[in-house]
Structures are given as C-alpha cells and as structure tokens.
Length: 587
Image 1: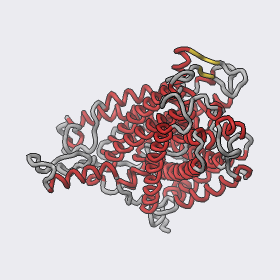
Image 2: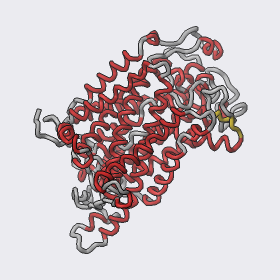
Image 3: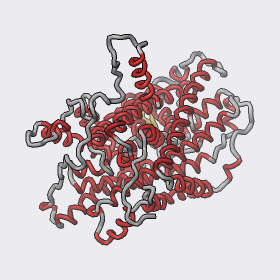
Image 4: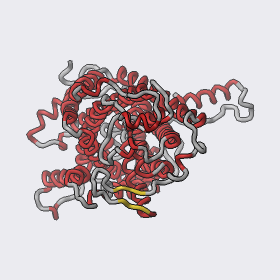
C-alpha cells in the first residue's frame, strides 16, 4: 500500500454508474414500503404520492446532474453548497449526508435481519384460503445479531474491491434487480388477469368497500388511542404521509454525482447526463407500475398491511407482493420473493457503504472541514490503496454501521423506522441545499457567459452546443424542489405533534435540523468568532476549479441524429445511429 496516494481511480464506465445509482435506490423500499404507502393512502392515492415523490427526485437530480456535469468535483453534495452558498453550509451538508448514509447502511442491515423472520400467522392463511397450514422459514428463531454480523462482513469485503471490479459487480446486481422487478410486475398483472381467486372485476380493490383513496387515516396506529381522520382533510394528510414514506425509497439517486471522481472521460461519455436521465425514467416507471399492480391484488385493509406501523418496517409477510401471491393461493413464490428482498437490501447496503466512504474521503481532502486536533486522523483517512480504494474511510463508515446490532432489541422494526426517518430528513436537508446551490449557480454562470474578460466564457453558455447537460425549465424545477423539500422537512412527521406526543419519534424526525444548524454555527465560530453579528458569508463562486467540461460537437450521446437525414432508416449509417441510440438508453 502506498502511504502517499490520496486520489481515487477513474475506472467507472457509464453503465456502472447507472446501475450503482439504481441499486442504491432499490433496497427494501419498493418491496416493503409500497404496501405501507397503499395502506396509508389507498391504491390510487398511493400512485399520486409516488408521482409527487418522483417529482422531487426529478428536480433535485437535474440540479445536481447539471452542476456535476460541468464541474466533476469530488464530494459534489457539499462542494457546490460550499462554493455557491457558504463554506460552513457545505461542510455541514457533507457531515450530515455522510451520517445519513451510514444510517442507511444500518437500516438496510436491520431490514435484512427482519426479513429472515419470515412467518405468516396461521389464522391469516386460513382466512384467505391458502392451501398450506403454515408458511414461513425456519430461520425465524435465529438471533438477528447473526444476520447482522454475516451481512456486515459481506458488505465490508465487497467495498474493499478496486472500483472497476466493484462497478462490474454493481452492474451485475442492478441488471438482476431490473429483471426481477420487471418480472414481478408481469407476475402481478397475470395474477390480476386470470383471477385465481374470483372477484367482481379486475379493479376490485379500487371499488367499494375500498376505493381510490383510503376512507380513514389513523394518526397513531400503534396506539390504542389513535385518532381517526376522515373526509378530505384525512385524505390530504394521508397523501402527505405517503409522500414522506415514498421518499425513503428514492434516496440514493445522488450516487450518480458521488461517483464523479471515479468516472472515466466525462467529455467523451457524458456519463452524468445519461445516467441522470436513465435513472429518473427507470425509477419513476418501475415504482409507479410496481405500486399500481400490487394494489390490484391486495386491498389496502389487508391485516398484514394494517399491522405495519407507520414508524416501523416489518418482514416479507408484510410485503404487498408476497401477499398478492398468498391471497391467490400460489406456493413457493412467496419464499422466493422474500429471498430476493434480502438480496436487494444487501446490495443497497453495499452501495450505502460506498457512498458514505466516498463522502468521508472527499471531506478528508479538506483540512478546513476538520477540527485542528483531528488533522492527523484526516490525513490518514485521505490515503488510498494502490488501486484507489479509500481503505480508511471504508473502515470508519463500516464501523459506524455497527449500530445495526440494534436489531437485537425487542422492537427492531420500530428502531428501524426511526433510523430511516432520521436518514430521510438528513437527505432532504441535503436536497434543499443542492436546489439552493443550483439557483445561485444558474445566475453565476449566466454572468460568466456574458463576461467578455473570460476566454472560455462559451463554456458557461447553457445555449451552446458544447454545454454538457441542460434541461428546459431547470430554474423553475430548482425552486420547486427547494420549496417542496423545505415543506417535507418541516412537516415530515406532523403526527408527532398529535397527542399522544412521542418524544422518541419527535427527536428522530427533527434532530437532524438542529444538528445541521449547530454545525454551521460551529464553523462560523471557528472562522469568525463567537459574535454572530460578525459572521460573514464565505462563498468563493469559483468557476475555474476544475475547468468547466465541454462536449465536442457531433459527439453527443443520448440524442438520435441521423447522419443521412434525406435517406430512410434502412440506410446503413442511419441504422447504425438508431441502434447506437437505443443501446445507449437500454444498457
């Protein structure tokens, strides 16, 4: 191992980045959270919640993607806020995002431990007419600590691989996930079509006594004194709660930007642009279709969905996809589905450790982000192996993931729910800051494009053909994402204010806000002293470090341009262009 090397290896291809981000988003969220969302809001309103959560992702990822495509910096999640808002805001964003990702790592491991407790209640099986008296795994009696230990070791070992091999493995995992989810959607469509258990029509879960939206919303389902809300007000609050629950499923799309220092030639491959667009389409389509088809086969008041507390996550028997198979008397597949959920949560945990280690490595490269007495530790964390693996940051992030041993507590599902809620709030703070950074960035590059003193001012012109990545209406989307994320942060757990008041839930939901502003204040005290009136904004507005990336005209990817437009698609050059275009979006 080299003691001087501090740089990462730029060995990832566009397809690796695509699947790494996709794998990060598809953990246990789609498989376990979709049933919770349908229970909270009803089958139709659940789809509306998914669309709204997707719109937040769509806005934030485009902001982050455009800035990173122009400036592929290390640690973009905190570099851009530090550059365009304030250094203290950037550093605070970096630390809370790093902690959010190690918390997500622990949450994925906790979910794995829960999924091994796969066992249906025998009374439920009798009620739905399942052909077997029992359905479950013999592993339910094992201590959760066993699974936490095994899967933590597995996740740690995979993250020690050189990034090229790691990327190949993640690509393999991502392809498996896409294929499985696609087949899962087809499975539910077929089950709904053939109706092994006859119903009045194919949309029976959308009709009375159920409906498009849930008829009532229970504020505290875990409490005997839970308040029941009905009417339009209840539906709105159910929708809002479902949007917050949906957002955890989308956390991970920023992986595209985190991989920037390890991407290969961005000018040639336009990795950020294509990966951003592909991920948005894939995640949105799969989540909407998955939630829709799941809601066709399981009513929102199914006992196993009702038993899902809003602030907890249970095992595979609470998955709407497993319930669809059980309610239609299908053997074997429920166990196969649960096994895949374990695989999915594990691969997302692998990606969570990757993201947290790269964020910590990026922070380690900035002396100002650390207290004076931690500088020796910072220099050690900055080092990488000869193959570019940041061994120190991988180890530290992995060690924090040991909080997953909370699974041995009597109520790990509640602990898991609070942990994931805290991580979502931290990520929402990061997304809010990213949108605000883009708003400042947009106006800054607009000034630079009109500055005659800059030799490379054309690189900042969003209308220029060599500008790497732009989307129409992006400034509006940045404001939309900024406002929506603030509202989600403030009202992410409005139920905590509803009696009976829960101190643990309140702390888990809002402690991240306090920590964020405390960190900002601490950095200003460090640089400007204790008097808040003397604190100064420190934003470099730097546009030349690194130099802006441009795309050579005629080498743009993701756009269909026929070399011979006057000829048909059967022309050899036109056919090659069409195949290249389709392959670029499919792979």
